[in-house]
Length: 140
Image (cartoon, rainbow, N blue to C red; front, side, top):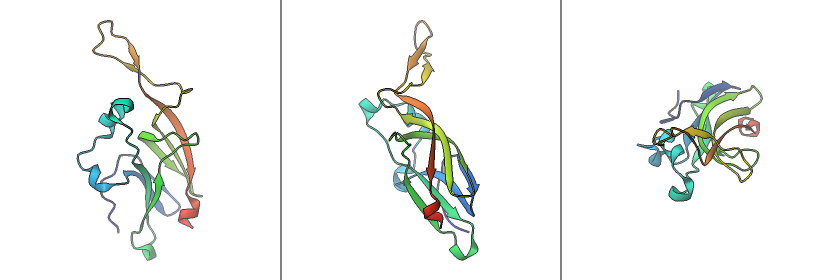
């Protein structure tokens, strides 16, 4: 029906479209591992903010048209480091949970440190958050 290219695992059906997560630049996506990138310190490696919500129409008259709904930014202005799950409602609302760049007052994710001599937890420079966006205007 239509070509979407490589996607991450979160995929959701709603309002005659299948929504998915994909890098905005498909060329840079080749050989890219979201889980590995998520673990890198953004102060050392820079922010990698190219996660987009995209959808493909299931309506025959649209001939597999793909819509790029844009860069994923949550309600507080955080950008995504990795989206773990996605859900879509019938009105064009998209709900996601994932790893996000943290803001100064955010609770960061604690991660077990296998390399620590005391086998303790370390604070990461990312956090797990829920986000919502409305793409209904794109689907009209």
